Image (cartoon, rainbow, N blue to C red; front, side, top):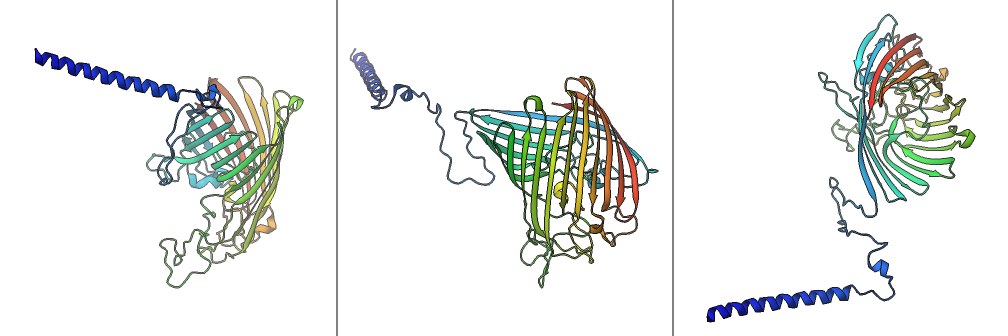
Length: 462
């Protein structure tokens, strides 16, 4: 009996203690819930404030670590996208379009028309991820994109290759792009199917690491400034590797220290500094575009150990000035084109090996351009026709082929292309297209070539 009463007392004491703590908690909550003096009730309840607390980021982050992800007040998404493509190619230009080392041959008439080849090419298939986040005013967009034009082909195992990797931060009427993206200068491109999109034939393009600031002055006028640099440095051609102008005593070929001939930052290299001002039409001028562009880069030419005739160590001023134009002629017919002039324009503009004379080391001036007509005949067929040219100044290429055997196909006096394309949507995002390209090349060695490329393509955009 006594034992039973003691047990009841312990239960009663526990209940009293529990009720006491609950009462204290309720009292404290009512005190903290009181409206602060001078603060509106709405803000005290959380209206207009961040609705979720975040841990403060640490002061130091290791290079391989991810920073805390701040998501307050914004909405985001991650979207995969891509293209699955197969090209059936017949060419009588004595080139192999599957070989990534033959980009030059892919856009020039490199051989006799008596030599031809046929191949299937899946390498232009693309996969990408796009991440977006916005709070209605600020917007972040990140893109990572690959294709399969890696530099090796191991028994048909095609390696991926980085195409794009950039983030774009937009606020108000301005945006900042950081990372590898399409060249923002001379940004208009023809619509043909061919992979080179007229590189070497008048279209200046590339995908470059860059920092680009854009601003919309009005709804129709946009300007930008950019700093961009091709990550691989100088063109890998004709023994022109990037080495120190003066090799120190006891130098070796290992590493990048002061005793090495392979120093990435010697000679002096600068990025391109560029700008573009573009006007886009509205109302009756809807679809019209007029843009002017300029870019400049300074560097000191590197020696070419494999080419003792090459005069290096020269101050090179590389620049381009040009314009872009798009004019809707009718509702279904459109003209588009570019024209530009510059010098020492090489790999950064998809003009591998075309920037310097290979003997005297002087910059090569060139005049480039392209024009295209696009006709949307119906919802089932779109027709394209165009012409492009890349015309270096002949005197700048004098004796440039002296280090090469007769018939060399490294540098050209004129390279031009004519093309015709028809595109047909099969169903939804599944398309087919047929394209004919005729290329004519006048090489600096005095050889003239011409050839044709026929391509039947199937692609699915997702």
